[in-house]
Length: 408
Image 1 (cartoon, rainbow, N blue to C red):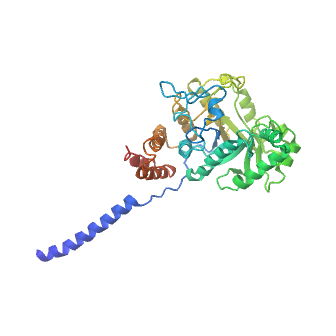
Image 2 (image 1 turned 180 degrees about the horizontal axis):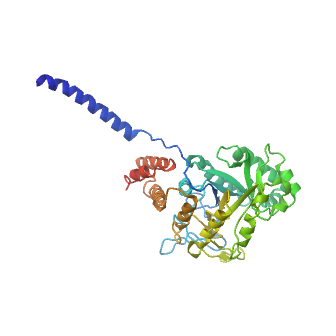
Image 3 (image 1 turned 90 degrees about the horizontal axis):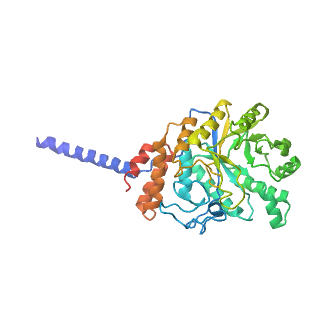
């Protein structure tokens, strides 16, 4: 017996050593957390119109005009904890700053698990006029995080800004627009996550509202090595002539969506058509003292979003823009709010056909809350939260949930 024990003990020691080593390696090793694309049953490419124009005191040092308009003060907080903002709707996470990386990650994770392929950024140009520079910084902040999340992007150019640049800086408006194109070419178009169509960078313009001669667009694009896949707003193709490849849809104020339906019927005659879907339109311009209201389209218990998504299905849209993630001024808000919670996102999940639901969206909200509230100065917790983020972008929500449970 003694001889047998002498042989068994070393074997047990070796076995224990190997088990301990593997246990430690498992605990301390970095999991494979490269971003993975979400599987969808719906082949439609779905993009989210995104506003990068918000500033908050904790990040930028002031409340930006899009939270304030002319008569709102976010420093005023009511008994429910809501700040006074220029909107009929209130973000579930409260008013935020577009440069905040925690907010950006929260937004992009929610979109990823909803089946969004990329964002279309409402872009005010590259010049330091009015609030265009802060908007540019907000745009670049979200663009910098897209690769980590595994999402794409393209630009929706607010070309009327070139007129303001001309009046403020004394340069021709076409020159200002050419400089914006040069900026996009250098900083955006060559990124692997930039959306392209037939090897041309996708570029939308909200209008055009100022450059309404096709020759102007020819001149604006002449310095680019590759002409963009350029899309004006629906029924604005006459202003862009041969420079465009199609059109994109927006909000239809008719009760029967006849404008939208007419637009979809143009699909055989356009190289590229991007449809639209939205939950409502309920702007704050009149209440906020910045102008008259454009009108109202009610949420109607989600019926508006379902109807506009159904039109995309009916006409087999290849591309769809969701209007919008976060235009609180116009009320076309899809991101989670106190009023609607996660309802818009779960309806879109049904449309895209992702294998996720409300549970994963709530997990992302929980991840955001723990990151910004309890663990800002806790290095160990922040390291765990970085691993949670990695699990989420690599589509391992169960692993993310298990790790998140370790944090109070």
